[in-house]
Length: 549
Image (tube, rainbow, N blue to C red; front, side, top):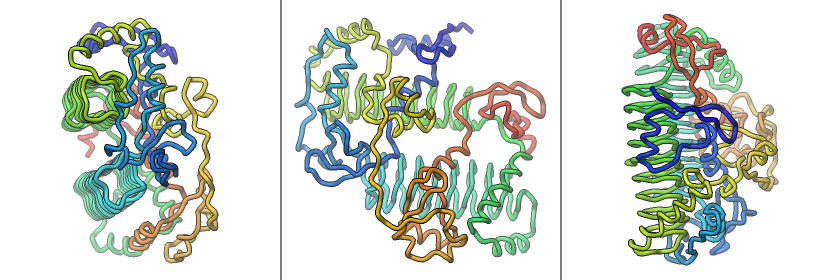
């Protein structure tokens, strides 16, 4: 197969342009990328703040609000209800395109002026402390989640109820500290499992129930650390087990020892054809993709669901022909856009809704034929757009995602920091912004995590008026009443980590989004895997893995 070698203009790493890549770029009318795939993903992710919330003031009403922007931001930020209202008009900020200046420079000036939305929550009920969510009820500190009730500290999860500390979880109820679990009921500390109930400290289970500390079992019941017990033996164990802090820690350690003895599949790809990546399901022709479902003809897509797309993050849902974009949904023929929904034939737009045939617009809704937030006739737009694209080709901007300095948020508050961590010096040296604002400290009584009771029975309501010092990063966190009620109901010891550190611990269970070449440890065949060659796990190709079950 024909391929062209290129070197990333940022990190100088070698990457390749395949024949099918050239066909896609030609179809989208864009030049070949100048950055390697990881650098392209990092640049897009620095525009997305999903988890960091600040207390601020609405620039319109001066009322208190939560925001993804700190109170020191230079941007105008409106509370959600006002931003969606008719009390202002984004077209009032429209400007003419200046062919004597770079586009990114003009776009940055427009971004400073046009009001931003503080959070992105839709159709929620009693779920104010959330972001990038929809149809949540009675939920708290949830992000990128939807259609759930009584959810606390959940990220990228949906269709759940009465659950807490979840990541990439679907259709779960009465679950706690689970990652990559689908169809879970009353399960704690489980990972990469589906259709399980009453399982604790388990990994890679399918159709199991009443299992504790097990790895790689399918359709089993009453198993303890992969050993089959009678119902009476198992129930005796589970009735005597208490979820104290020490027992939780010891069970995690035993599970970690067991998982090194059980074979793991090289890649998590299910019901898919001609796909390469990890956690891909019901898809076809998807290469170097991670956490992708119901997709076709995609490459370098993370967290997606689309038909024909390259270099996208958290993008999809009835979308097709998307390139170099972040947070784009229900869209067609979209390039270089950030956080846009129900848009078509739209390029270089940011935080827009229901647009078609627009270029370089920000925080603009229900419009068409607009450039830099200025309205044109169809004839004017179609005459002007080709001139602008030619101008961007001359300035070297056409084909590149937004310059990182245009990002409205600091690198340390963005999703890029989660996947491509940098310190302040390194981030600024690479051209990223950094957020120096420090949140005010609370005046509540404080205690160290190590001083917490080992058993939930020793915790009084006084904990609700106390801050806990996270044992990992030292940040203070609180226990809310609904959370304490959950711990007491299930006999769970209080956590020693703040909600961010708990999230990163769950995220750490998933392999890095990087492919390695190695050999199956059973048959010796060459495989691609997200398990680095120096890792201790036993890694099989799919054929050997299935034969081992």
